Picture 1 (cartoon, one colour):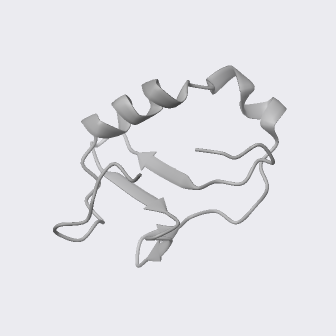
Picture 2 (cartoon, one colour):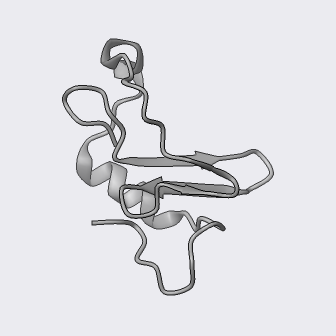
Length: 76
């Protein structure tokens, strides 16, 4: 999930083998990687844009393996 300036607040990586890892402002880094701090080009990602409701519905279907037991998912 990007803000209006192109900074990520929620990031999910889903791999072909089914592995899912996720980061947000509360869990921004671990041994697998971390939330990007780069400002992303909103025009470049515009074709992949989802509405907020659709985004959170999709997040709810995923089970990131790098989150601690009891950690709320999806965030927010």
